[in-house]
Length: 280
Image 1: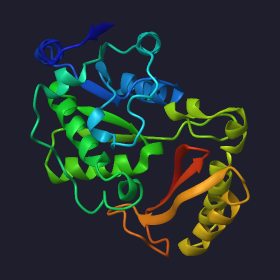
Image 2 (image 1 turned 135 degrees about the vertical axis):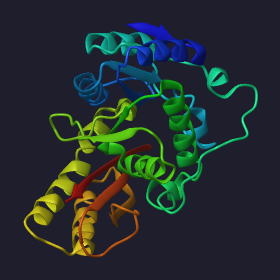
Image 3 (image 1 turned 90 degrees about the vertical axis):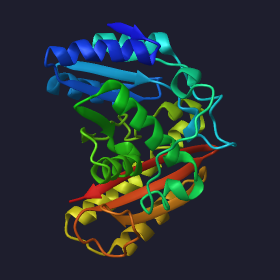
């Protein structure tokens, strides 16, 4: 597996792959990889000749009071996991390499970024859209793989690609969970023992609502109230939001009509966790 730190090195590798007619799958990550990331790499490995994993903690998607400096990092472990799963190249640039001495351009998506996590993280999705645009251009990937745990991110990137006619296919992959239902996340490492025991309340609350939705319940407002009630039973949990939105534009809905996203963000202590389910 190749370890590349510069854009030039990745582009050189990509040129050789393209000359040979090889398809490229991209897995964008911020590192500190876990089984959730591993599932994306495995999917990319099955569907492409070449797999590129980006391993970059992107500073532009963090607000001034967020956890950029504290965000967990372990590049050696990331390399071992990527190599074991058959990745061909891992791209690990510095912020200076990605953005240069000055950067005046960004990619912005309206409407879909206004609510949910975007309401409390106003710079986040501009940072996400801008960095994945750079990664799409650098890698010239045919497909890019994103996990459903970050459902708003998946929806926003998918819309950006469609609206701007990017020559890449966006593939959403299922949430990977711990045995007790907690969605895999690099931020789970922030939880202490007591908080970790409390954290599965997110999945428990969603699972009950999802079961009712699958059984035919169409009252999204009722289901959100039930999710809220279940989470509030946990003393360590503080709700940021519980929302039902249509999948196409991520706008609030009280009724399930078509594909609907039920998304939650909950603080367990000071750790903000997200989870969701999507109805078809």
